[in-house]
Length: 341
Ligand SMILES: Nc1ncnc2c1ncn2[C@@H]1O[C@H](COP(=O)(O)OP(=O)(O)OP(=O)(O)O)[C@@H](O)[C@H]1O
Ligand SMILES: [Mg+2]
Image 1 (tube, rainbow, N blue to C red):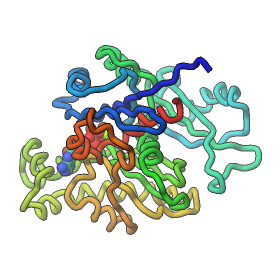
Image 2 (tube, rainbow, N blue to C red; image 1 turned 30 degrees about the vertical axis):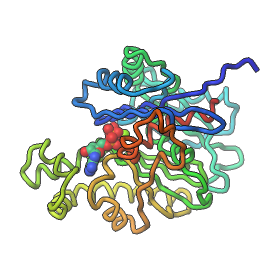
Image 3 (tube, rainbow, N blue to C red; image 1 turned 135 degrees about the vertical axis):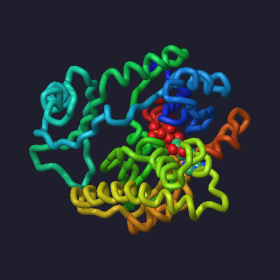
């Protein structure tokens, strides 16, 4: 009864190329009350860039939910004997040793029972468990930076899970039976989260994204990285030339996504009905069409700020609209407010 309710929470997505912050406030429903975006001038400018996002924009709390991703984060779906949550916590350290390529002492572990009713169910004496392991050093570094700019980290999540939470939070009136794959194309990686009716069934991170497209343009057209990046973003009349140059890189990524779908389909005996793309990398000219060709199913962009009401007096709505498609992780992180409010 006396629990202090958290009213506002910021989802802070420190990507490899850009920092995004989205604040949600609970006011009978969720309202988007703060937004900031800044590109990272270099990988070691995280601290300054995060600080700048908070100096230049209005937020109402210092509480943030942040996330990790990349090769230091391992997500595994295991089948274990049924046991109590306490026993599971104890058992998981030993079990984890089999699945993670790092020393268990170097990692933070989390696990939870994982159920998808009616789909790929475990045997009568078994349960499925979602295991997440992350190198401790990665989390420590992140927390150190955030504390250094006066932020108060509440939760550390994983990018690919946040993408699923954003969909559940921002999109209303979804058809619960359809199987959707959310594909968030970042700079260095692509997150795939297969969901049905708001529940995540399968996730995977592919270690390629927009950077690979820029590299392909630079290589094939003999340009410097900066020139290739600029041309990629504004191809204008050279759209066909850009598409030609990126085709092999786009095909590689699309093939990885297709293999993930095949794995999902084998495990769950159910196909992916449609694909929804987000992330800065998905702004590449022709990407949606190319993905649709390789995946052979409908592919469309989606807006992670979706149906959320926006406090227009406090948020730069034009900037928000410009970057809306890149905010899946930030919205998903901030949406933890909903569960914890
Ligand atoms: N207009 C555009 N056209 C094509 N690509 C774009 C455009 N704008 C941004 N990008 C690309 O989007 C990528 C950045 O997207 P995003 O902000 O989602 O990545 P990130 O979160 O920083 O990276 P990651 O999730 O991999 O850590 C970069 O590769 C950038 O080149
Ligand atoms: Mg990202």
